[in-house]
Amino acid sequence: MPLLTLPNPGALALSVRAKALVFEDPRSQAILDRIRQLSPSDATLLVTGETGTGKELVARHIHALSHRRGRPFVAVNCGAWSESLVESELFGHEKGAFTGATTAKAGWFEAADGGTLFLDEIGDLSLPLQVKLLRVLQEREVVRLGSRQPIPIDVRLIAATNVDLEEAVTARKFREDLFYRLNVATLALPPLRERPGDILPLARYFLELYAHRLGSGPAALTTEAVGRLLEHPWPGNIRELENAMHHALLVCKGHQIAVADLRLTALQPKAATSPPPSERGFDRGAADVASQVKATSLEGALLALFEQNLPNLHEQIEETIIRTAYRYCDRNQLQTARLLGISRNIVRARLAQFGELARYRAARGGAAAAVFGRGEPVGSSRVPGAS
Image (cartoon, rainbow, N blue to C red; front, side):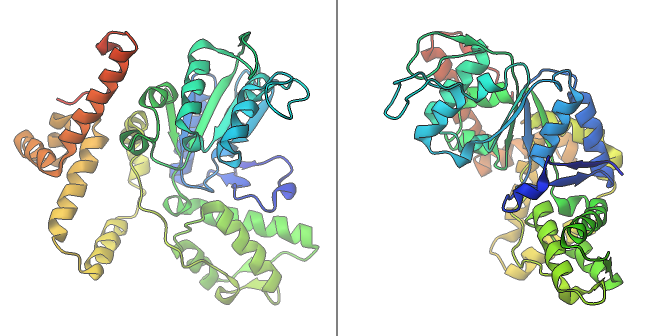
């Protein structure tokens, strides 16, 4: 069984990160194949997925499979630092650059020189820092705070986020030019509930791990407990599963874990977001993986909506279907019509009705204005086209 773990996971007891990842489910096996394809390249990689899905584990595995494996791997959580500190941590500073800077210090980019820099929760960076990060990626050099001397760097950047960066761009919370710079190669990690084949192997791994730490004998899951684990939506993903197994091992009797021993949250997972455009092409090519998704998931989602007794439910469902298909097809109206089996005129009319075309034109106009303001040709900024 392919298994990925963090180095020294025992020192990360309070971390919300996933500390183990397996690839038993067909969707996970497709992800592993994708990792092997992307690893030899030096291209910037954007990893998306909910918290606890194993984004750092994937980044470490990509580094280990690359030609940079003998060089540093530096992992940084962008959301863990205040704005006043994150700039000096990223880019470094010279002595006297600010109060308390008693010595010069190299930043994370310099520390990762020759290797891989993993920036987690990159969507949490402020807009001014996004500008400076974009320049570093473009120029392949950093300038420390308090200095004017650029320092060349050779770093592969892997960025990760649990938010929809396209929506953040539309909301003007994330720079469009930086998004395109990061969106060279993409990898969307599905939540644990969408790869059920991984649940039991991970549960047994965590049971064995904590049994060893606690000095207790091995414990087995009852049939009912297995069923409960497979039914749970796992909003906390792998970290939630780890906590559930740890708790169950502490309270179970006779080395048998029953349903009553499982402490599972009543929280529900967030609404799913569409994957990045380049990742959608990968999903379309993996038809054998898509066929593994349970057909009952759509029915269950509809039943949940029916129970809410929402007004104009049919219109809301139609809007969601057409809007999602339009974005899935990279905002190509003809492809959207073919995908849904309706005419292009209907697609265009509905998109206009929902305001999708107006939002896209506004975003494209803003991007063109920004490029024009820099004195560059308007056509030099790539924007997904609509036909």
